Image (tube, rainbow, N blue to C red):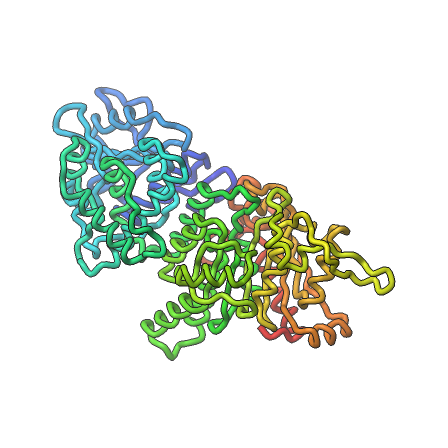
Length: 616
């Protein structure tokens, strides 16, 4: 869908200029699916089609009609599929869809509002319909649905609404809490992926129209057994993700619905940005933290990774990894370097090198075991790297962290053993750390006072009653780094500005070189969960005492930047660049360009690095 002006869209199928509305956005989404996933040509599809009824026409037009051959023929003679689209808030319209079908030759119908979907098959009896798992792709019949071979599967053009449709159906029909629904959807996603990777050319993750009918009638068939057997394989192949005693907690009819929605896709071959965007959106909607942690927006992840520029020989860790955004972008950044810098390797050799890097050099920790598991699953969607992620409190003593890492099969975690730290720790006074056994292991867990003679801050022997986690994370991240290692950490601006926290800034200056500070937009950055949070990204390089003393004598430069445009507004809508007349600015492909200054900040930092000989 290409936006022409703020209030118009260019129709994907017909090229017509249409008024932009929420319902129109839903229609554009399904038009693209009909062409790119189901294989119908644009010449077969028309929009806003008048449907004849008796001597006149029905009062409303059909949103989308797929014709058997050409859209230039009348729907009462040539219609094959009719699609009724609604806004996400609207639930009516299925009767309207059936009326369209009854007055045409259409065999199939789809009702879609962006969050829920219904597929209909017209029976031979008048005004009689049956729900089916999907509509046929071009060249298929109803009987072909669910009889898929691996070669028949297609990459998804969009997965956000697919995941949302599955989630909403389970939530409405199973009576589970949202978190439990989330778990069930994730199980089925991984069952699907394990099936795709198997050597069997036939798909086992599938359901036919006949099997769905039998399930709805309460009859036993092979469908449920196929899926349950696949889950047993998942638990064996991914023991760090699934407990051997875990079960699928869905009724057969719910299981049938979800499998029907996922079965035609090849998730492994779906572009990583499509999978990643869908997964992140899904996670954000259903796994918001309650301890002050906000998921890091992608533009901030991009900023931090590109400015630190990790290499394929560098160990990376995120000690508050959440859903894995920093780790995945860093891993992909290294993979892009491998593709660019190793033309001497063939594709198989490059893939082996990438997988080795993901398994050996990427580590993630999260205090929330659910988020640690989500992060593992997120990494699996990108092929690998999940073995280095585990659940633990990153502020515990290192021997406890290492013990948890070894138990989880993530390898050793030791101080001063990482080259790059990327993290967005939980911050805010609501989640203060008051555990004395933790505070006593941090210099910033004690009170500090300023020496009146030297003007320097000195740590006292008095332990604080509590400390905010973001300040402790600064010290812990520096402990993770070896000399020369570098880090990017998202912090509330109070850590960098408040006069009461001057001792924290003094501590940082005595442990590391301050590479850069990038201020983030206040209103949009953490919308909606952390709206109004003023934060910055602090970039540091750990140096030994001798190097730091020499650096201080030189009064070294620090890169400073303020990001004002992050690419989306406070309603999380993408914002595009426009010229002085208000027209969209497009790239060489004719696509609108996202309005963000993050690339400009990265480019300016690259110049700064070259100017001051920073070797990374």
